[in-house]
Length: 234
Image (tube, rainbow, N blue to C red):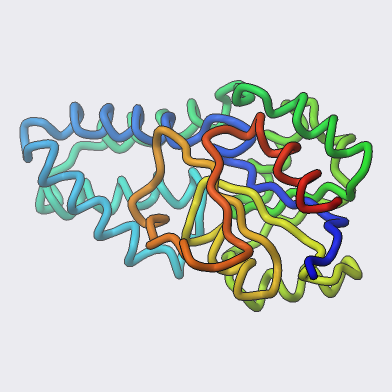
């Protein structure tokens, strides 16, 4: 017998609003600034390597990304990168932090529909100030019963969130575009994990789907999420 769902949790970036595309645009700007020193593919590989190395220091978000670009620029140019290029990278990060929020199709209607019958949470990684800014600009803030900005999304983190909100894990569902962060850990914590793919997903967030798990689902769009949830909750 399946427990009736009571709580639906959503990832934020690239689940509710666009995010990764702005990182990719900035990375293209980065490659153009360093084109006299290295080719884009080599630079991309070095940047990804540095991002993996720095996650434990900077966490997720724009500020850590900018610091990692600067570090990579210094490394690939053997410390010959100019102050003007560093200034350009800082400006690129500031542009990202000022970029207006663009909700993905169907998000607002879906959350408003589900908020009538379920507790709604947002569980996201990233810089606290930036995530608060995006939530405020999104116009969705009043629809959430709780907002969690965490440094990592792991099974213990989800278990702690569920416990703090008084949620039985089997009655909760996490929805997001990252198999690694939004699907597998909540399933391990006893909840449902629903994967809604996005056109762009950071390479670090890729993982193999738990296709045989009874609490795993993959949807083509967030717009069909209510149908899934109401079928489970009958």
